[in-house]
Amino acid sequence: VAMLTEAAAQGHMEAQIYLAAVYELGRGVAQDHGRAFELYRQAAQQGDALSQFNLGIMYRYGRGCEQSDERAAEWWTKAAEQGAAIAQYNLGEAYREGQGVPQSYERAVELYKLSEAQGHAKATTSLGVCYANGWGVDQSYAEARRLFELAVVRGQAEEATGWLQKINHTTPSVCPLLGQRVVLGGLNTTALNGTR
Image 1 (cartoon, rainbow, N blue to C red):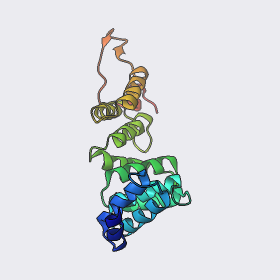
Image 2 (image 1 turned 180 degrees about the horizontal axis):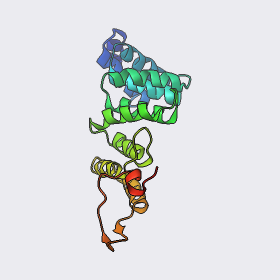
Image 3 (image 1 turned 90 degrees about the horizontal axis):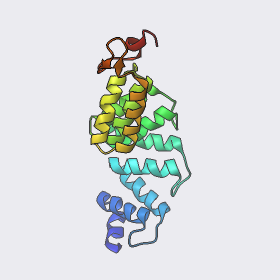
């Protein structure tokens, strides 16, 4: 830890990042969120996207600093602009809930799509939720189902499976005219019942 501390004090970003994690988790040292916050801040100011994301987490939960959803969103924005999928997802959640930023389903969907395209499992589930509910997009059970199935493959089995069950319960799978099971693909609520 002494060598890392010396390197971090000299401005070495990698040392700051590693040492911040050591203090945040209390690995080999006493857990110190204040010290972790300061080290993440130093690395974040040098442009490290993961440190910017972690600094956002520290602000979101008030670890080593005063809690601030606004500051969390600011740092997640910086990391998201650099393409950090996890920051895009968290920022999407902030926009969906209106935490630290104005509530906007449309902006949340944009961010979820960016994160989902990089394979982020939680973003895949959240994007599916938006399609299932028509939040920021035209409601589409078919697209929601596709995303939830993909989320299961990506490791979000419990949450995505719950949503799949909800969709399967919501949309009919037996055609009342044919009396047999049919697959509904590419349909939205307007196509299903002619109204919104």
